[in-house]
Image 1 (tube, rainbow, N blue to C red):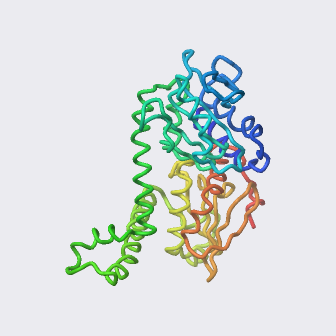
Image 2 (image 1 turned 90 degrees about the vertical axis):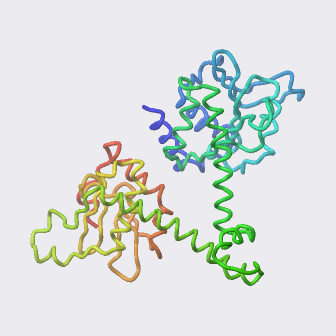
Image 3 (image 1 turned 45 degrees about the vertical axis):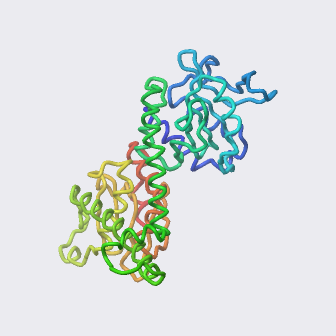
Length: 362
């Protein structure tokens, strides 16, 4: 299995069994050791993966760091694990902070099995940064996260390469956070800058109150328009089948009308699962009572159903051979079910779990 496949297996595990990982030891066994193994480290070699590592120079008797990764005989990565229910914070960095300064480690990982924080010393040499340069959630893996993770694999590990990425990731992440903050709650200074060329006169409290909601709306419209543009492009790349092959009569086919909401819903689902299934494998097949979204244009491989032909809309999700209908008030709510849609698509991507015609008939 590739690193991508191994990591996605762990992602599925955290989604399915997180309730059984309430202790630190459970997280280590179920997630951390397989995570290290996925990066090609030999977890059974104590000269490569060292558990319960103690450094005498730390000055705290009996204090240990959970794991140390050695590469070419040198300590390079420190790992501190917490129970899955822990909200990771800088207070949990204490042991890593002390060990980082007295070992040859260049990177430190703080994790609860679900969230991983990667730290290094970008701000001051040999002093661990409080703010991570890279953070990801295992249950929500993206291709860009996997790309960064591969740099920590045994075969690709290169300190200089990772540090270059770390600098970019840390400050890009901070900028994105600031932009998101301005989108949700634009500051007076930010609003003032944006409207400086749009109105004359003093920037009064009344002007601020008038334009702040407009700035928020403009941000959201820009994002929505960008997403819609990408979805439209994705739709143009694949074939949309409006008619099931097993509809025998032209008269019946003519009664099927694919609405704009159904088209947009299809594009959203297709965009969500494209990390799992190639876009040309995701097909829309409209029916009289619902709009089906299938893998490989195969009725035995349903990804989702759009029940949009009534005043109340329902999204049909599949868990193995059963459909669950969920009421949605807007198409944006489809994004809330990203994990479930990808999990279903992954069944077909792996070439198994094909459902029977009878199972999906209802």
